[in-house]
Image (tube, rainbow, N blue to C red; front, side):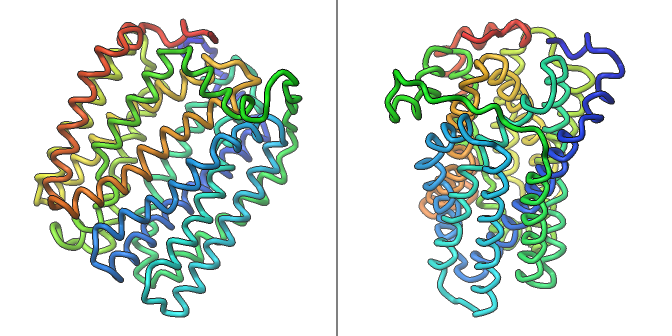
Length: 416
């Protein structure tokens, strides 16, 4: 459905839905807490080790449980009340934060206990992810969904912008203060989703499918949808190669010399660009040549990554990160719209789980890849080579997925 055809009151009508407002608030606080935790853990680990490799393992510790559990979690999201899944998941995240506080209070000097706690964080996020990504269709009508998805994305981006900056400021008082804020946010999210009244209409298990077949149904479906497969795999490889997030503490401390406050601003800059582009997409959505626009913006993401990698000036680095976030937002918007429009409701949890595997691989595994490559060839060469690789992926994907390149209007996409 083209958002320009919606009545002017549609935005207000979406916001009148009580449970959707609770969902927005819960997602905002949960994302805010996760961003603060990311800044605090990254700075604390690098402060203990001065090692890019150690920062890489921060991403790996969270990625491995995600990739191992995400498919079963998608099946659970289709068959269990999603309110309960989210509430329990954020309770586990609160427990993980409490353990980080204990480790900090004990003045732990080795990093492996921190990695074990981050594994618990990865487990909780594995189950929360598919439930959250398939939550909006439960709360609003089909006509309201494009606006609701845009508002949800805006809430997420505001938290991603504010979280790192807030985390950098709070970290001035030490990691315990930052972790304490995260603990309060995660507990609030668990309580918020318990308060949601809308119940998930649970899907009965298909008697013709084995447990393995049921869990992998999302993969089977995506394999038959080249447009969806191309969109989410493009984001995977582009961000996997071009992501420099894991190396930001090194830039903040050793290259740009801006401290934890500067680190928070750098982590916020991509979200600032993403937020600006997201607002533009709400009011002026992509109308034509959507596929080509996505490819062009992912190429821009790679070029901006190269600029960031070579920059030794803080404000140039911030500008490059801002452009990276704005360019990436176009790909995120296209994928976030394609997946629910191209997926039958009874499979949305499992398809969302597969989508999250790609997202997690591009983020957490991308952090691991960046840390390993930086430890091997150096920080600046690793970022520049990654940006070049992203541009190469764009060229290759335009050839491999011509149907995605030729997508004109998103609203023409239907479930396969």
